[in-house]
Length: 267
Ligand SMILES: [Mg+2]
Image (cartoon, rainbow, N blue to C red):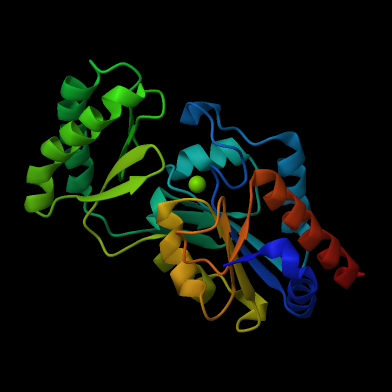
């Protein structure tokens, strides 16, 4: 894994030669992680930058988030770009509407599971349970460190029967535990789907660039290993991305560079 800015000339050459299909995770990538998901609204600076990128003829932009589609659209608040919510289970954008064929009964199962989790976990201070329609998140960022193992244990115990019945699968993330429908779908599959179905006029020419910071972004990094740029946000090490940047500020710096190169090309 290499530091992206240490080989910038090579990256610049690649970016200048191809139109860029940019896939961005949201929390921890476009915007720093906040204590509560509801506080993670985009900064004006990043919003302007994304708007600029979305107007470039040789750039396509998709936000790939674990949030619900509704929530990520609200947080970013731009029209004319692709939004992918619930790790790709639902996607929407210009000419695109995708909803994974998750059975309606899953919403009922999630509501049922939520009730059980609320009863057991809400007595622990700081737990936040979020029903995202097609999936459910238990956030424990605000839980005291000493209580976190208990949250994980209880979550494991309560979800186990659902997992055994193949009604749910579990995704751990950064300070979050997620119950997900038992479908073979993830951010990597979502990226593949978009490259096939939202490619438009540059069909085979796109250089896919994926930037993300969490465990769930690894599926996308794996997909892009051979055909694009995969960029991890954070300390290098565990990720299978090819490059890394240190933080969301550096993501911004890199996005500005893509915007500048794209601007030059469209003149
Ligand atoms: Mg993230």
